[in-house]
Amino acid sequence: MSYPPLILLMGPSGCGKSTVGPLLAARIGGVYLEGDDFHPPENKAKMGAGTPLTDADRWPWFENLRAAVYASQVETPDSPVVLSCSALKRKYRDFLLGGYEEGRSRLVYLSGSRDLIADRLSDRVHEYMPSTLLDSQFAALEVPAPDEHAIEMPIGAPPEKLAADIATLLSA
Image 1 (cartoon, rainbow, N blue to C red):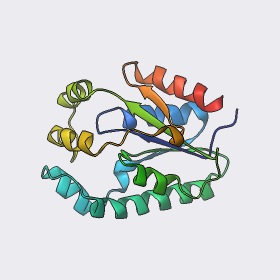
Image 2: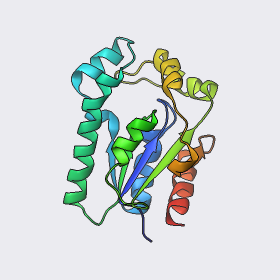
Image 3: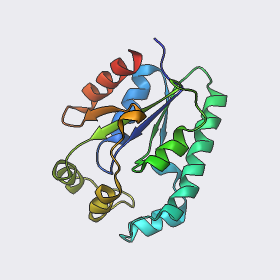
Image 4: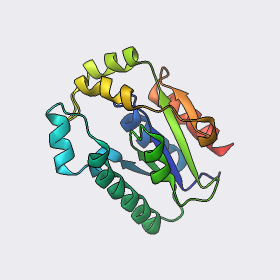
């Protein structure tokens, strides 16, 4: 089966990106990049203190992510890259997916209600992303527009099923 070289798995904190992403990458023979691993230290400190990031804070992170994707594609050119990143705004997604010909990248939106995600976050301990920032995540979220051709995947199913369903839709 053939998959796009870049799959951007997006959604607010707590939607399951870091759980579904590695499962999806393993299923499709891809490389997984955890977006959180590429935050500059000052971003982690700011979020850890309960302060939402600004656009100015995010751009160095997005630059790091693009560089990591390209490096991975050079190292493993035959393996698709699954990148998890909140990518809450259209301009962020456009930047991360920019430079790919149509059909050579794919956006997957893990969608869920604020209440469902808040329940998940209440059971999770995260290095620097407190559940108190969830409202800022939903305030910033721009649901993908139809012209972004995103695969919207409601997060109610178990992660293994979500990864399998996404892989099926990506190969179609």
